Image (cartoon, rainbow, N blue to C red; front, top):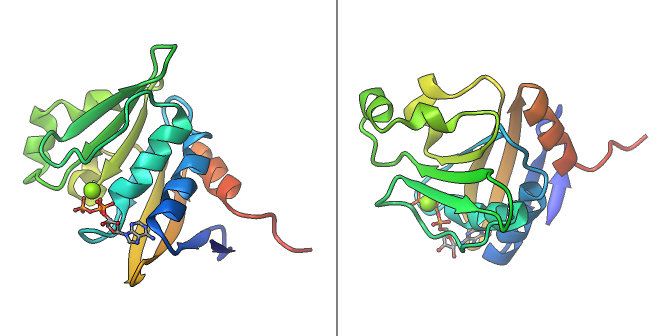
Length: 166
Ligand SMILES: Nc1ncnc2c1ncn2[C@@H]1O[C@H](COP(=O)(O)OP(=O)(O)OP(=O)(O)O)[C@@H](O)[C@H]1O
Ligand SMILES: [Mg+2]
């Protein structure tokens, strides 16, 4: 895995699905209640693959699968009432759909929410969020560009980047 920093927009490259899951695991272990992670990227970029790692790192007891047909997958930890919501907005036709599914209730200070195709619910997203754009570089290489808005997201982004060289 390679890492660079570009004005606090950490860029990471993985070369296998396993590396992507590992990256997710590292970030997932840092997630706290109220954290919002948005995953953008084309079909097959690796969003769900990253979510598998995120959920594992967070401590989910069930193994996450693609929520393509269910919109929301909910995961629990062995103990505690915090939830990890994995939301896939691909099939949402617009904001009206988003409101009618009650998605806004998932944005709360207790739970963690990870969203695929977040650009479909932009108006619903809280200002503090970590945005990860995934780019398919060909073969099995994927580039992850992290962009933080808000305090919590900045902490998460910084944690994923190595300390700057003196
Ligand atoms: N470095 C990599 N990281 C992640 N996935 C990879 C990588 N290299 C190859 N792949 C493959 O790319 C695919 C990623 O699928 P995944 O379901 O995670 O994509 P997605 O972005 O969630 O797509 P969708 O928008 O359809 O939900 C898998 O088939 C996986 O094996
Ligand atoms: Mg997916």
